[in-house]
Image (cartoon, rainbow, N blue to C red; front, side, top):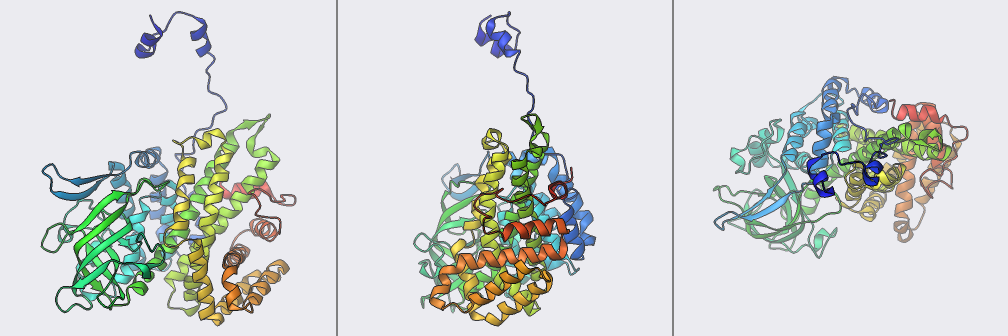
Length: 568
């Protein structure tokens, strides 16, 4: 029997040097990726945060959702839909333009899971206290398993407060937006049980500078708010083109930007002239489709007043930026749990990897970063729930962009470090660590890059310095007499005296210090002393931050920190 025949048939070949060699191929000291666990039941810090927010009534539903997310078959779907990526069908068999994006069935399965759990509209539909913390927890749990499906969910949720300001549109769409019944059909709005919304701002020449957009909107009839327009132009990034409608920025005849509701199908049941040019071949976020499109007299309805398009769409972006923070915190959490699981089971130099002193420093740093990101995410979610309070609006307006800058940046670095814990196994492309590493940068870029976020922070401080000082006073109440944190508070207050022409260049430093201070205060108030002390001691050490794991663990109860991080 030849070697080729042996491989094909699986038959046992006669003993040769080659076949004897294969008998030595025993797999030992290899650790499978973590699966088959509940990402909520194994996260005591998240359960504590939900209790503090008064979200206990939501916990049973979240626990059931976490159980479903942690199943091996769900994790397999997440892996598959990032490998079997969306494809564009521009025309049907007879040459009619359809611009349809086809997805693996797993994409629809995960979106249906999310929608059935009421995680799209629940913060707006449910009036119970703790609803925003519960939503953030559900988003955080889902993001640990698969991030691409959260793109249409994020945009749909963020469109709700904007659409509520448009009575005619809201009356038509309310029930479909609030529905928990997933409907993945590509049919006109009126035929859908539930709908997804996307957004289109970015153009080739403008990027973050939306005022440089060139897409035009011409009124059909008198125009004005709620009026019908025809859009001509392009979008360089058009998120989730299979959504049932998009909110789009285009210039009205006077040259001012407006915000338009652009459905996939016209009211007469014909396909709208939003032509997909191609799908983006992205570094990560591969399960989700992002596209380039052209509008060729596309039907749209003006939302708000002409000339107010940017403030209208920025209101939507305020919510999507929160989702970026929570989503990056989710990636940090998944990276940590996979790294800890691996380190607890892998033997190196006669010890478990988790017992090696240098590895303990790395894992400690990952654990501290993960809990701090989660605590800040839940605190921001509560601010969105209580936004009628001026102090909470300051958290929304000022801390949200700072947190998006910092937490999303940290996810990029720390997913790479967690990959290294697994060594070569982490770098293999079919593993979860590789997917996390490729996925992490998208949240730093989407909804405004790091510099845009820092500029937003600095502008918010310049517009209302008293609100910023009141925020620092609130933080001061949580830091107590901690001298290091008091010094940080004084330093941030002193920065307000910097001349405006110099302050902008300090934006990244300012935002970083603000977030670290907020995280330290939250941990001091809510986390065990072992966590808060270690976070403050490491993050305020001027030598910290050069590389992950450059922390002095002497005096830290590392075992207690790692057990709290992931008690398995």
